[in-house]
Image 1 (cartoon, helix red, strand yellow):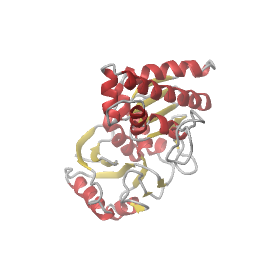
Image 2 (spheres, rainbow, N blue to C red):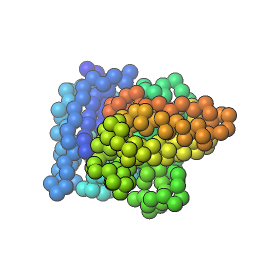
Image 3 (cartoon, rainbow, N blue to C red):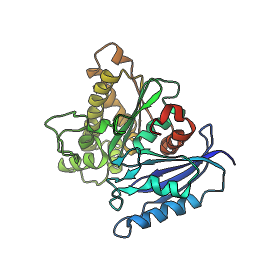
Image 4 (cartoon, helix red, strand yellow):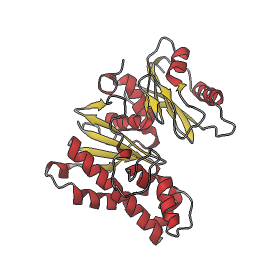
Length: 307
């Protein structure tokens, strides 16, 4: 096994690592639950990442690519994931660079990694202009224009979760009001449904109950689809997109989410060019972020501009 990239996906509930071959095939894969408070200080988390990497078979490496929850200082790779409170300003890129001093180490937001993976080897393959979205605990995204990743001045281009879809909507953790994330993220959607009398707990429960026809759960999925459709219509008018690929836990609800999304998108995307956009489920599933992280090394001409 030669010339692979070590790819790492850092999330609030799971940590994953893989060896990714030059063509994007995953040659080896390991995952572990993310240590949770109060037992997870910064160094415990770091040792857990190292132990996960050490489970992979030996291979000659071309580099290390990482997708990590934000916010982060990019491209320096100091990370402060909202859902990993033990890491605040943690120098993840520096730590990995110390371990792999002769290799390129590149870190970006996990939603950006997902978007890159889907563009490189998934639902956006062969398309020049794409938005990749993660709809899960939060709502994030990455933007590909002209076949290349667009980073923006701080690495946050494509962060569609904080597009305003309802100026009188619920408060968002960012401090704003009516953001897409405040409405469509799984925990926020479940909280809204509970306020309406739904007896469940999680976004996954909500999707299950919606599939069974529970009226409040169905209304909640319609609400999420509406918010996503409004945001995607705005993004399409701004960026002239061909494809929007949606991954993350809530996207697994299928037509319960995508049908109201499509109805809303088509009601708002009125310019002729905007009507051409296709919204599709992410094709690579939970591997999209790992494959995208590997692309920061393997397809750096399109997906990495910071070095």
